Image (cartoon, rainbow, N blue to C red; front, side):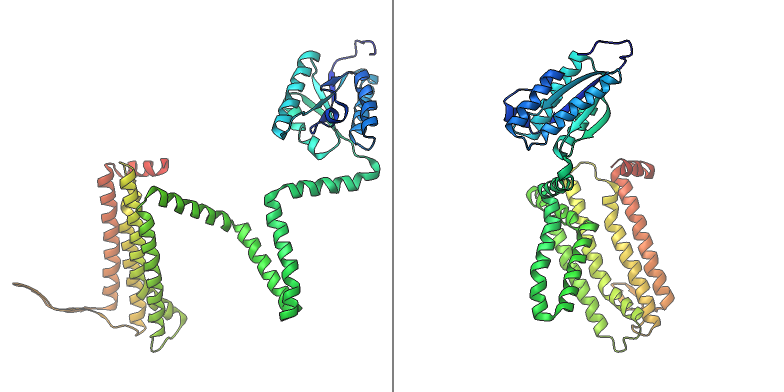
Length: 392
């Protein structure tokens, strides 16, 4: 140990970290190993045990850095710490305990970390959480620099299960399917098919459809186990949606003069909207019943949703009927004669404009009624309802 000079201002810990405990397994020594002579002796023991181990080079680098710091009139303490444990978490904790002991005993202010692998580099944040790290010195054997870097990259890649599944599996399937398609349909068709499948997979992962489907399946499973009414109403809503789509397609196919695509879309909406509105009404009613069963206070949005669904259905139905009637696809709305005892109402027909106005007015009125009902049953004013929605 060189004599202490007045210029020694900073006490630096030159620490060689060994996350996989190569030192303990090959020499039988326990860590931390502290001091120039102790580390120098450890280099000989490691070299005799395994001359090809890169840890020998990292130990020598630690000694070289400590010597340079001392030549520059810094008080350097060289040490070796390792994670002697079966699991990585326990190994990291063992290294953290050894660092705490070194900091307490030698009162160091900064550190120079010497590593020789990507595994050891993961311990740098552990050191940084306890000391100011002035430098990270990674030792790579010069003859094997590219080989070692490639090795560690491949090792990290193969250790990540999710990365393997999302990268290796599609590539493997493409390599298997491409020769078969080339023989059956030709190279051009095979390349187009493989490209389409890979593009679809990338969009599937990029947009997050897999996460959405996983979340949807989990919610459905939880709903089944908890006995929620909405599970049944969602099935009813799906069935009504299919009926609505079928009714719309059937109405479009029965047009005597299909005309433009706009008229066809209006006919589809006119025929399918009642069924689609019923589907949305069934789904919203199920959610409302779940809220009533589970909670004492029902949010105003759930009370208002059925009325909004009916209002939107009436408005869409009215506009689609307006365009179809103007296009000569349907006739005017006719109200038949109604007789209820002494009260009788003579039948009448609505013009195209009046028909649209009635449907829009009914939709707005039903929406307003829904707002009033939601406010009444929630026991709060409009501002309180908005606050409750924001907090939810």
